[in-house]
Image 1 (cartoon, rainbow, N blue to C red):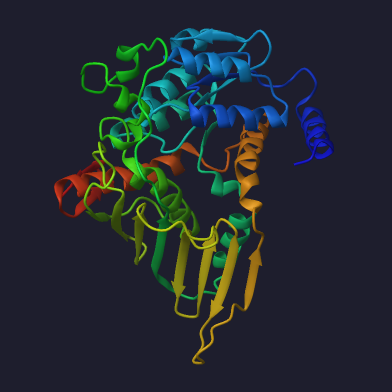
Image 2: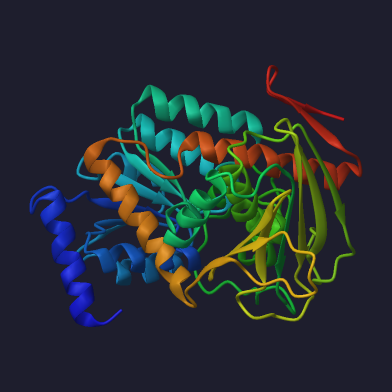
Amino acid sequence: MDRRTLLAGAASYQRILGANDRPMLGWIGAGGRGRFLAGEFKEIGFPIPAVCDVYQPNLEAGLKLASPGAKGFQDYRRLLDDKSIDAVVVATPDHWHAPMVIDAVNAGKDVYVEKPLCHTIEEGYRMVDAVRANKRVLQVGTQRRSSPIFIEAKSVIDSGVLGDVRLVTSWWLNHQASLNPAQLQGDLDWKAWLGSAPDRPVDAQRFFNWYYYYDYSGGLIIGQAAHIFDAIQWFMNSKAPLAVTTAGGQLNLKGAEIPDTATVVLEFADNYMANFTLGYKAMRYHSSQDQMKQFHGNKARLDVNREGWWLVPESTTPELKPSRQHVEPGNFARATRDHIRNFLDCIRSRKDPNATVENGLSTAIALVMTMESLRQGRRVRFDATTRQTRV
């Protein structure tokens, strides 16, 4: 984005919200993803007067990105005590999402929380109750729901042109050689970082690679399936699946607990099945092919990825050519910013955002079931009445 476009966008947004009515944003979690989001919010022109992180180097890096004179906190609850903060961004390990979101909405703050919404099903329902009881705006960071490409593709499937869809296939292919380097460079409040997770001695590898340990997240399977499952359920107008079966490969990333190669099968009450394959020891394919969702109807097939969508009609000829398509290489880069704009619009209007807390819970249920199936080696079912999983 060039400087003229950026300044015009920021000026337009200030007019929408009013010169003296811009929400003050507090930042909880100033690691890599948190700092990326901070940059995206800054591009839109909104102030960040407070940053919180339990690791001093992250806090210092976050303060450099924040507004001049921003306050730094190690305890997120002290940030929430600040009455001048209107909204917070939660970009922490997954096991901290629920307590931070619940405390934030109880303190009267709106919330943008990274995906997945939660680490367990029970805490997800508590998050829904807290958000609705406090009448807060919560946006889950599944930015495909704000991508023009995905919104347009959703309208294609809603038109009925595919006919009956009984199967959805999807994948996410990439290559990762190893875990991140693990050496502490400053003070870390390890006990605060662990939170509800089991107590253990300070472990730099777990801190820098929390993504790959069951206590804090669900590895690459959950990190990428969060986007894929959410898009599938959105396109198919579905709630959480009835059952999930996961098969995982061997551990190829030294030190990780969670496989980098796996396949998940989801069964839905809407009379369709979906499968998702993760391959992080694959070749890195062209971006138009490395993340794909294919909706197989009896009249046509819709392919959707970050770069565009293709409608493939029924054909008996050897060559299948799309009857309609919309491809914009590089366009997906704007999805996160569009998602943030939607969140900020809803702070002002008090309307529901594109990725509601209920959407986040529905996807999180599928993700929790995925992990339970992987660890138990069996098919896992979900009972919406009892809100419990069972084999």
